[in-house]
Length: 358
Length: 136
Image 1: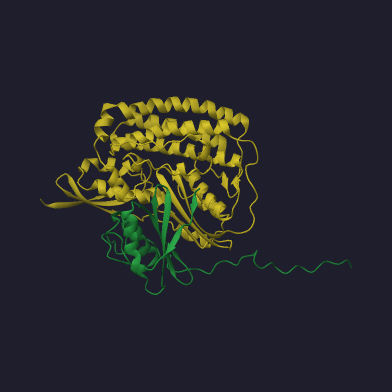
Image 2 (image 1 turned 90 degrees about the vertical axis):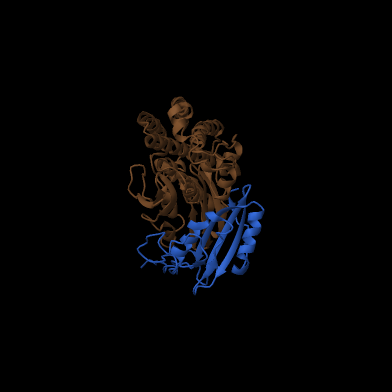
């Protein structure tokens, strides 16, 4: 059978960000996918040589426009661990709330993109309509819709007053009802099941061996979620990782649907328990030592490696983003797939090229 | 706890043996990170088992640093190893998937292989106090 190479991306209707694949096909079967990334590599890690450790919170938050807050949170947690800073409990709860709001709008964004890739346009529009409501809550509580600008070393920059907390809980009721409505379609609709069911199956062992993280790993039955480490306020909240065992694209979609409702429950718990008090402490001096900080982003575990020598600038700042960990699995899934399934398999890991090209 | 620094320092000749031992215990590869230090290239291999991190630390000479690929043990390593080659100019021998320096399309070749002098630390050496003003 003769082989043909089909170039896929970096510009393609299904790709919101640039990544390129050379798809080697025999008839309609993909036999190999050769990736090419690095089109928008920004070298942000190198910026630690120019920006001091306090300024770098702003850089960390701009690594990604979707999980921006969790990037700044992870960076701050790493620096705070190095400097033995005791963050006020109220700030830890506020970080938890903003982190979970990020997860909700990220998952809704993905659901919309996947619905669009399936040709289910009305579901796509409903998913993003609900996402707008979440962004409105983010704006009301943090002041921004993409860049929250709320996290700083030692705590957070702004508090949420009692009236806004009350309004947020009311807004969550409406958002939860909307999410329940659209996830019902994602979980039960015959066309969604037919399009995603059995497509791109990763067994539990495959997902683990390939180093997968986040919903991609949990949909294959591995209950790994960095929130169980107990950072921020998660140690005080009721959290059990959501898993499925099928390991296909449908399972990955279902995990994200369930995580939407889980995040709403977590925000409700956090807002009900939020303690009174200060939201930041003053931090003086410079960090010294090295640390690996991990948190759970919407796409999975993010790893921050920080190395400091007592100067204002870190010596090394490195991030391993969840998409970087999930790309090998995507390449594995593409091997042997039907050409028509390539868009679904690309999206199934929820790739964030912006994070990957930090 | 989110910060962990459990690091074992090893040499390149025992890298494969150590990594295989971790793999046999069920550890997942979390990341491979490189850092350009003034006197060496520092590599950190991180592994996870049930949320516990284990790290292996290697220090390579600045002149022609090279190390063996661990792709025979963890096949998901392709992006990490190509990244440290492209950004740090570290030669990784035996990579199953070698992009030959084309994973990242950077304007400067191997941008992380050099290091700039750190900015002076203003808190380390306080400026001499200005002479006290006296009434004339």
